[in-house]
Structures are given as C-alpha cells and as structure tokens.
Length: 356
Image 1 (cartoon, rainbow, N blue to C red):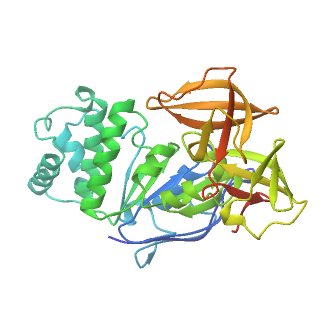
Image 2 (image 1 turned 120 degrees about the vertical axis):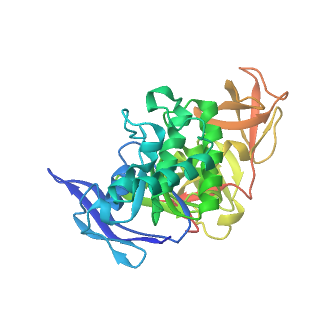
Image 3 (image 1 turned 180 degrees about the vertical axis):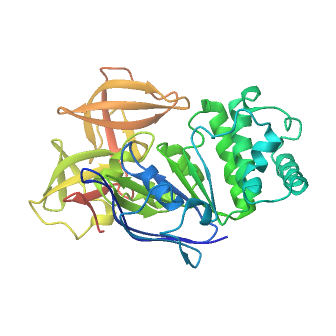
C-alpha cells in the first residue's frame, strides 16, 4: 500500500489545450480520495495520468517512494477499474479475474486459486464459469473489483465505476465498495461526477474545474464551507443560494431584504462593499409569516423530495430556495419567508470565502 503524490502535474494536449494545470496533491496511504467536478474539468485525465495511460507534459507522479512519471502503466503497480469494466467477453469470470496474474507469469494453478479466493470473497463463487454477457451489471462490477483485488496493487484507481448501474444498485454498490476499500486499506482514487457518491464514500475529496483543483477537504468541510462560489454552486443535491448583496453598516442588504451578518464573517466586512451571500436551502428556515432578518417573497415552485419539499421563493425577482419538512409545504402563490441560519450562512468576497 502506498501514498500518491502529484508535484506540479501538467497535461497539455496538441493545440495548446491545458487539461491539467500544475496540480499539487498528496493522498496519504490507505485513503479513499474522490475527484469530483463537471464534465471536461480534467478529473479523468488526472486519473489516467496517474495510471500512465496519459503522458504528463510536466511535473511528477510519485507512488510510495518511487517517481513513476516515466514508467509504463504495467510498471506502476496500480490497478484500474474503468466505467465499462473492460471485461473480456470471451473469457469466463475465473479467467477475467486471473488475467493480470497471467500477465505477471503466475502459474495457472496459483492464479486460478487466487481467482477462486477473491471471487468467493465478493460472492461470485456460483458465477465463476459464466462469461460477462451472462452477468448483470452489478455482477460485472464485482468481477472488475475482484480482478483489481487479485493484483494486490499498491493503489486502486476507479473511473466512474458505478455510472452504468441503475439507481438502487448504485446505492448498494457504493456501500459495498466503501466497506471493501476500508477492509483492504488500499490507497484509492475514485473519479465521479456524482456529488452524492463523493460525499458518501470519500475520506477526502478534490473539486476540479478547468484543469485546476478548487478545493480539497473532507466531504463535511467541502459541503459546509465551500472555499469559493464555484464549489458552493456545484456541491449539494440542491445548489447553495448565492445572492448578491451590499454591506449596510452592521447588516446586509440582499434582494431588497435586511439580513444579519453571518457569524463566520462578523467584524470582517466593510460598509458599502459588495458581497455574495451564500446559504444552503437546508439551512433556510421556512415560515409562512414575516420574520425579522428573513428573505420574503411569493412561492413560485414546490418540488417533492420525498421526506421533504424544496420550496422556491421569488424574492423581488431573485429565486431563493428552502427545504421544508413533509406536511409543511406551502402552495404555489403563497407568501413565504426564508430565514437563514446565521451559523450556517457564508459570505464570499471576489468569489472567495470570508474568512478564507
């Protein structure tokens, strides 16, 4: 097992397209680390560059105590699971799991025994003679995981391995995968565009945009204190409310309403300066009647989230969202008020969190 370190890692494609821009990142031994970001942000390029499937233009990739930047993928002692699992359709489960050992010249009896051991651990013992076309999506995923486990590599790299599963199976698979990684203790880098996956599974995560890392932290840190407005607007099943405002003495003027300064920014703002006020819908307390320090408007949308409702208020032409418990949802057209929690609201200056 080994740590992974990136030092000034850069990848520039022909034509001058910079997919990775001088990235520095340290992933400790045994950590489950997620790379999250919108399509085209560079997360898959970063994973493939760690694996050696893409050649770095500059910088270094260090795995354990080895600089592997110039090494071929097979010499890096890593294992990778792709989005489509990359199973061989003409091979049965046993041979698919054992294939990396075959490449390493492990004897047939030894590699079949290892495949059987790993397959049994993942509940595949009744499927070892089947081919991928005879398996469900979830079973194929387990075969891909078993093949990774059989290699006993220093690090695991996952490129959106759950994206081809249906919603219920994805929930089961992410729980299973997190538990498995914890038991094995192998350093793991997991690429996803699904925020729920990253928040649920990762020990730490990096949010990427246009080849840059915008924030690194635990899921709680990234969710509760996004470092900038990009992360704030990207993270969360319901996006954070990001509202333009102006400091007026010891209060804030936001969308024509007077709000209290959040606890985290007390004493750090200047009268007359322009700011962005951020508060997650989950941290807006909804009320049908006027409340001091709230954002008041008319209900324009009510969305059923299951055990709660997402209510959208039109506050003087600006949309503000709040999460309301089941049974307390208003009707469209009703007057409503969203009172932000001072201990959860945030202030951004020039796009960056105050205090940084």
